[in-house]
Image 1 (cartoon, one colour):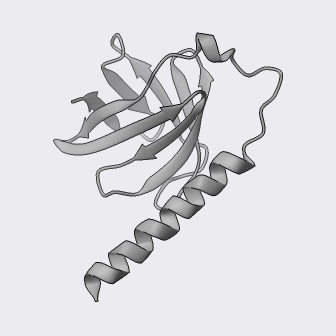
Image 2 (cartoon, rainbow, N blue to C red):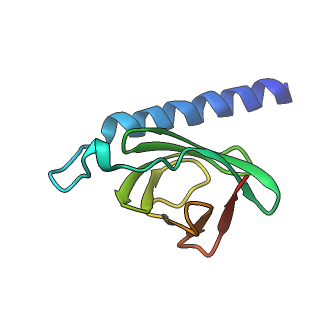
Image 3 (tube, one colour):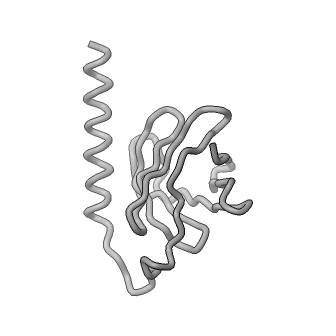
Length: 113
């Protein structure tokens, strides 16, 4: 039963994340897709694996407990969480240290794995 509950939670979270992709409307101030750097990859938070998947300016972000969030690139070295279960909407991530560190606005730090 626990396995089925986790599967349902994952499916629900993926549906919410996909909905975030569809709901996000671009604006004239968005970056040109050719100018967007890649934030995708494997990351670590206190030794626990995290991940970022990217399609253009839209990101799917997975934290150390497996919670999914949608995000959008909002600057040359920055992206902002739009929503997700277990995530604070509006959370900002700044990628520093030549792309090897993510400093989150809640004082959390991810390191490139």
